[in-house]
Image (cartoon, rainbow over all chains, first blue to last red):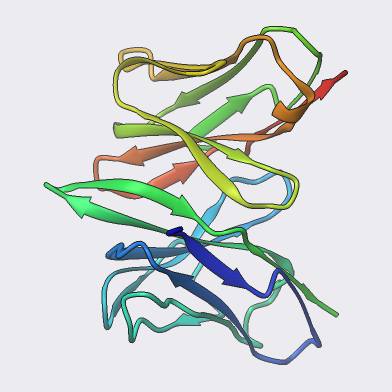
Length: 115
Length: 108
């Protein structure tokens, strides 16, 4: 079955370490997104990519980096510069047709805890 | 003020009750999504609508573009409906804005 795989589901890291969250999709979707979810707040966009080898900053990109070397993969690195990295991270994807976006699909998320 | 406001924030119901969750938005949109997030964290898309009403099983979603308001209804609620329901709007610039979610608990 097609879908988005995020791994790992839970991740613990020491303060000051960089950590990379994986997101893989086999839906042949062009666009991929990373969101951060904090309690009581809506999802906030970190980075997005509409095409391979291209990505754009979202609303809260500081302290994060991404790459899009393959259509299927959009890893997110949480760097030591991110002041408050403990959160739930969701990856999503969709495709564009006729100027509109369809097929919005989410992964199951990664809960990152920095100690 | 958030661009997407949901109410209520938390909702507890008895099994069998009719449930309504509301969403108001302040931006021009091309579409509105209702999403369901289960305790494990994964999100599934329930509806995408840009006008009128859609029905899927016991779930009904409506939207009033003029009033910038949408509702999600659940008929004959069941404990397995317990989840966080998120309203999200796609602006005309194609970016998504999310509400903070409504946590629904249905008791047997």
